[in-house]
View 1 (cartoon, rainbow, N blue to C red):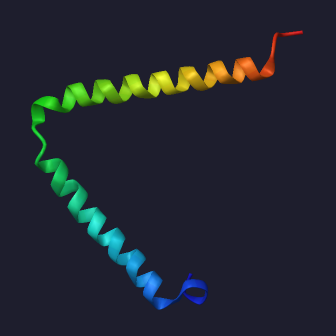
View 2: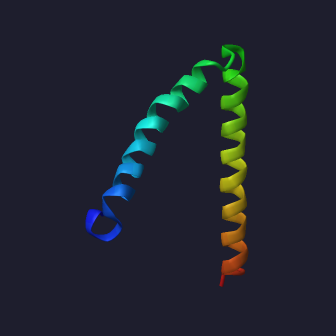
Length: 66
C-alpha cells in the first residue's frame, strides 16, 4: 500500500480505522437500551427479506426446471 499510495494515504487509513473503532462504539453507547430488541428484529426481518428477494431473482433468472 505504501509504494502505491504513499505514507500520507496509509496514515489516513490508519487514522480512520482508529477513529472509527472508538467513535462508533461510543455512539452506540448513547442509544437507549429499550430499542435493542426492536432493532435486532428489524435487522433480522431486513436480512430475511433480502435473502428471499435474492432467491426469487435467482429462480427467475434460471427459468423453469427441465
